[in-house]
Length: 95
Image (cartoon, rainbow, N blue to C red; front, side):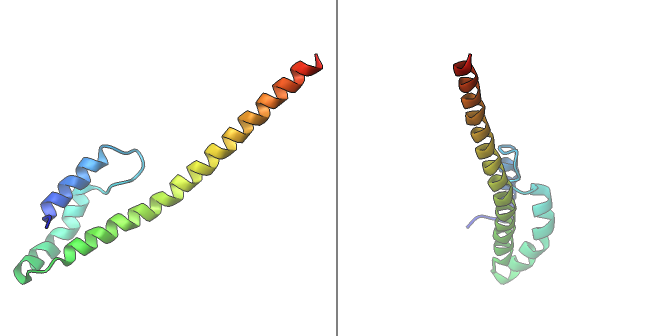
């Protein structure tokens, strides 16, 4: 089972790889979950790990909106490029 320090490290490492927010701030993750992880260590629980999982899920949900918007905009731009190409072809056919 991964320890809090390992999860924090991985979050920071992943933060370097993406421009969208596909990872969370490793320092903030550690700051938020450290007290809970220390308390859970005494009771042999891993509720802090659940909190980390929920944090990743919230970021994924936030990214879904951004990615969906970017996908739609790409589709619109592609369509506009096709329309523009046909307009140029029509203009050449008239001449």
